[in-house]
Length: 549
Image (tube, rainbow, N blue to C red; front, top):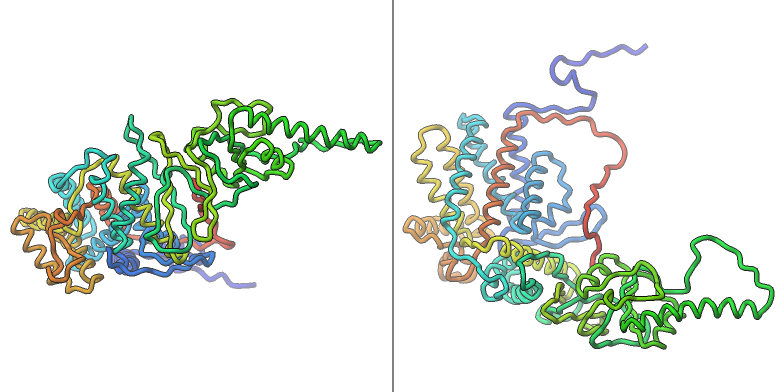
């Protein structure tokens, strides 16, 4: 009989075998801070216009080459619980604003690194958290005073261009002007006249290999990489009938047996099926439609009658694409073939035609009227990874435009806002009498960290550039920030004159989410990890639009 070995007394004795437990400053707090710092260090070199790309191979061996922090974090599948809190804060920033995820991670890591010094000085985590919260409230109070301009008319491309250009520049330096023009053109063309509401899904991206990025263009309507069904390749003033079902000889819903005795009965049976299909195709033609979009297979017999009645046939396998066609053209989708088609259920488009971009055949549904609800940016490039990275930059620009429609207030970019807030916080910290003043000053130092990152990624001496910018801000020049273009100006410029502007609410939410993540991690004094269960790890299901155009 095996002897029972008693467990050591203490907290571990209450847990199952294999469970892990850490507590105290050294085991829990410092361990969390180190993990977050190492995670942020991997993203630090990807920050800003001169950020380096990361090569990430995910769990299904798909390759990503990008400097987009949101994509890197989604594909890394971070395990450490403290680093996961930072990732969750960045994901909230992505959902709320659509940009600024790297800002959240780097700022929260800088706050945690500064907190480590304060804890080693003898401050408690509670005192550090209290100081950080005081600093955050003061930053939120001062931030509205740093607004330098506000976009009044979101339909004016000139007004929104600079802000979108700044957002795109951080991902695609050198191509920002071209991409910003494409995004402005696509976004401003689909805003309704009556009210300002914007859905980012209304701007589609169609990626076509070949040529160069300079050959990219905007199409009012939709572009699909599909081959046309049949021989009719163009219809002007198109009336579109949409069906979510296959268009073919009708199959019975239940199994049945037909007894045929003679060849004549067989002929009549076939003729009856064909007559019914022709009647339904004729009903489509009689409704005024000249284009049919189907969500399934289009049979040979149906194709014959389409040619007979001069109907253009388009087959789209994605239900999301069918919904977009309905939205763009105003059509109502039919779930099955009917003998009568109402004229008011048809969609309207200026043109539906087949084109060839490079060696890729595409179907274009062009809706150029003022009521156009969707636009497609057709981008060209040499490799799939390059096109994917361009698409991510476009998504950031479109999300920035959505932010402008909500709140058009703009603050200086290029680190100018962070340095001005840090300057104010340092002065405010001198007025505090308690231990919170140390936390407030460390909060200011964390804000100054962004200029250092910009400088290091650009190959400049970070301390010299930071000292010059801080000196300018002490002299009252609140719009002086980091200059990435001209080496002769020692890395500084007036970002307002250069048109480098950030969204006010993106900066506000980024600071709030980063501070909340840092204070949450600092308030953890115990890590208790149960023994991992056996079996494969369940993959989180992400709802929404899963198709990849």
